[in-house]
Image (cartoon, rainbow, N blue to C red; front, side):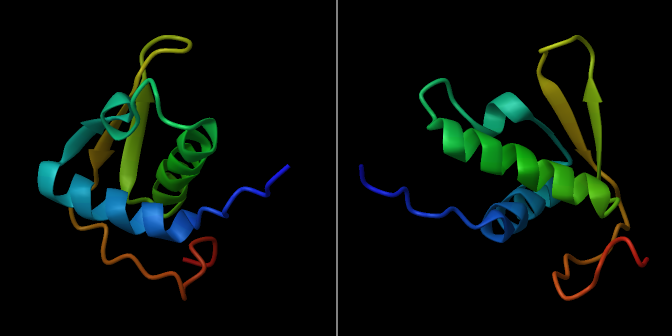
Length: 88
C-alpha cells in the first residue's frame, strides 16, 4: 500500500475563491467531474465549507443529494488564512 499524497485544503480554498470572485456563481458539479478521485471531491467540499464559514459564499442545495449552488458574497473581503474566521 502506497500512502496517498496529502491534498492541502488551503490551495483549493484559494483557487475556488479566485474562481468564484470572477464568475460570481458556480455549481459544485463545475468543480469536480464524475471521474475525480474521491479524496479530491472531499477536499473540494471542505474548501467550499471553509469559504462559507468565512462568510465569503452562500450555499444552496435544492434537493437531497442535489448539486450545490455556490454564490459569491460581494464585499466579503480578502481571503486571509492568518485570521481565525470564528473570531470575526
